[in-house]
Image (cartoon, rainbow, N blue to C red; front, top):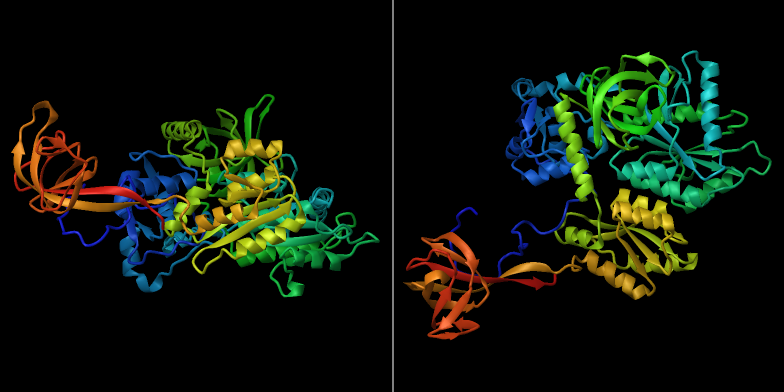
Length: 636
């Protein structure tokens, strides 16, 4: 540890953890990072994790943690490119600029501006990255990526089929195929990418694995059926993902259609459409009659324009795996949605626990292509093993780098280090360290009537500093969807007089989500109240016991030297931790292994008495000062 000067005790020291680090667990991104201020940090085109930590004045652990959150597993000696380093720095609230560009940026400061690419990888994860005009010139508008969700039988598939067929009928270059998990359509000369696959469970499962690939979510509600349980779940999942929402009120052609009732039920579920003074767009459509589809497409493009979705096609590609399979005659085939950069034949890629070289690319129309730009879905051939849906694909310089990254991810996954589980104790520690401002909860109860009572009880626990955020609530057993939502939202699951269904139990085992079950309300509120106050896990506080001056050194053979000492203040306690000061600086740390008054072993020696203090093999000298302290549990 760095030398520090001894100062006389003036009350208890600030709280410290056993390991000497700051209190609290992993930081959780609950709010946008506030930029640190000051000039941007210059970084080279490639930098090792060690050098990046030094340049940003942060620890290696902080860098590695943020890399893992972005799907990269790197050792402290591995190098990362500037774009990746810039993302990590942005996550930590530090602006960066590439070396060589920095001087020009300073000289042309008056003509430069900070540009954040909304909807890009940088902005979507709550990061702020400084682009120079030269870098900003590489950003181009990309197509929005849209997911359709809703209750079963409300017409999700029919709506997507209608959109495809309409696009084919109205534009020669319109819709493309349905074979690769994503569909592209063209409306008024602009592309829109629809993800075919997920219901809300798959949507959230991908989010839980770090893949945030949707720009806009369309919630389909049948005009003759209204808001149903899966509709509510889909709304909760979209809201937790902080993705813009458009409601498509489908089946308006039916005789018993009642769009006004749907709008009211949406309002009852805290989804206020524009007509009711909210900000959610609602579009009446009929997939069967193919009416309202143009309006829906216009609204998608409008929301996309407001997001100003951009990507840089001139950097190495980053994308997300949508699905994978073994195809006869082609081997391992994976469908990737390219999100930024351009993926080309011959690129070496790392994909989750596997890697490979891109041997062939096939677009959604079934045609071989040489490259895939941002917001394009393509099938790739050349991956050594089948990746999982949600795995992040990255282009890397060579096969050695790809192999090392895949092995690191495999090691983290098998050791459990890659599992981002959040327990009530973790969140309590983070609240205590002021790293989070809210405790997120997925609440399930036995009956609907219990929800109101528990919600009211939890609202009373909120304070101006911290609050409980109920991400989702409902009556019935805890299901797999609840657990996935909790995992993706970094929330805990609270059950009252209910149980886990088999699928939920498997998800808990796989994702490590903290599930708390209660049958008495006051026990539930007590636990969450202590978590909010940061008192669930007592913090370790350093308590100074006293100081002793070494007046002679007594040789004690194999037992080490004994310090013949005089207690100048407080007390010296057997078993207590000690620091040895020499010339005002700490020269050693250890423990009081033995404590004697003359020949008698004693538990403690008070101020004004002489004693023999055994410190094991620590080298002692006359005139040293021994500071005795203990770590004690203290409620916040």
